[in-house]
Every structure is written in C-alpha cells, then in structure tokens.
Amino acid sequence: MGWFRANIRGFFFYLSLVVGLFTFVPPWFFYCVIFRKQELFANVGKPFFKIIFPIFGVKVKVEGSLPEKSQACFMLCNHQSFIDVPVILYKIFPVAFLAKKSLFRIPYFGQMLAYTNSIPIVRGDPNANSDLQDKIKHRISQNFPLLAFPEGTRSKDGELLPFKNGIFRIIKKSGVPVFPVTIIGAHKILPKKGIALYPGEIKIIPHRIITAEEIEKLTYEELRDTVREEIKSSLL
Image 1 (cartoon, one colour):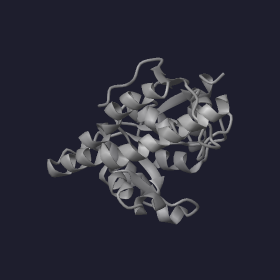
Image 2 (cartoon, rainbow, N blue to C red):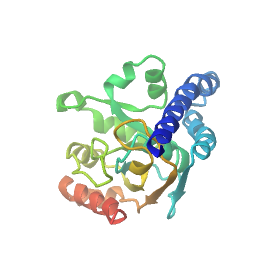
Image 3 (cartoon, rainbow, N blue to C red):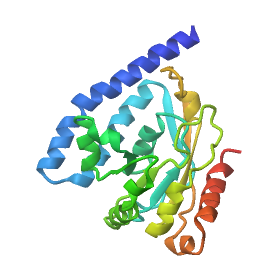
C-alpha cells in the first residue's frame, strides 16, 4: 500500500510541475521579458516550491551558512535525484545551468533555459565545447551563479559516483571560484527509477567557496579531488 501511495503521490507531483510550467511560469516569464527583468525570472522557483513541497510532505533544510549571492561562483553538487534542481532553486539562490544542448531545442522550455543564460554543452565532443570556459567566465562576471553536477548522472542509492574530469578542466581554464554543495536524502524522497515520491527531509550542506586564487595553484585533478572530498565529507 505504501508503494502504491508513493506512486500516486509522485504522479501528482510531476503533474503539478507540468501544470506549473504552463500556468504559473508563463505570466512571470512574459513579465520579465517585457520589463527586462531577466535575473528576476530565475526566482520563480522559490514561491512555487514553497507551496508545492509542503503539499507533498517534502521538507528542505539548509545546514550551514550560504554565501551572499553577490559572491558569484560555479556551484558543484552531488546528484541524487530529479528533485535536486527544484531543491536548489527553492533554498539556495537562482542559478543558470550547464545543460545538454538538446534541451534547448524543446519548445518553450528551451527558450526559458536560454533566457536564464544557461549554457548548452555537447557531450562526447570536446571540440564543440571549445569556447565553454569563456562563456562560463562571462556569465559569472555578470554576477550570476552557474550549476553543474560533476557526477554526470544521478546516483541510484545516494553513494557519490566518480566525478567527470571535463568540468574541472573547464573550470581551471575559466579561473572562476567554486562552491561545493552536498545534498542528502533526495534519493529517498524521489528515487531514480519510477515516479514514486516519499515524504521526508532533504538536507543541503553548503561548503566553503574555493577561490579562483586557490584554484590557480591546483591541477585540475587536485581541484576535482578537493571538491569531491568536500562533498563526500557530509555524506559519511
């Protein structure tokens, strides 16, 4: 019975996301476009998820101090669940994303991604991403954080997966600060397989920002290992 209820709960959670995407978001989107409030658009997640999460029994708690939004940085986070992104948009601060290029081709959704200045990436083709570090540096210079998941995919059981090297090579070349973040418990709330959603608590653990000056002294492998150890330290 618990499994059945979780699947019903998950179905309505996903349905609420779709309904919100096509009813709650569009007026905000067009308001921001018309009045040139680009940065304001990314804040749409906060009021929306403040309503949605309690309805489905999801609690989100930040343990630690978040940096000021003015400290624009590249956020790197472990990836446990589809719900990770909503959790970050709700409790941390608005971010742009490194996202698969194919997502930008989706009607309406792709336009919203582009409007937040999210950056498309092509997986498996380094030549296609040759100017990525310049785009990252420019975006952060505009005082707006970026987010990526260095594991590259969601963990099935919450265990931290190996980190991909590519993102750290790019960050090293970009010369931007890095903000490691650990998410705990998301895989229990919304597992990778199926649509079941279980009520419970998700914790966000912010770590110290690794400055551009510190990163300059590290190899990309050392940077990768440093970030991984920071994120892993809160999962033990």
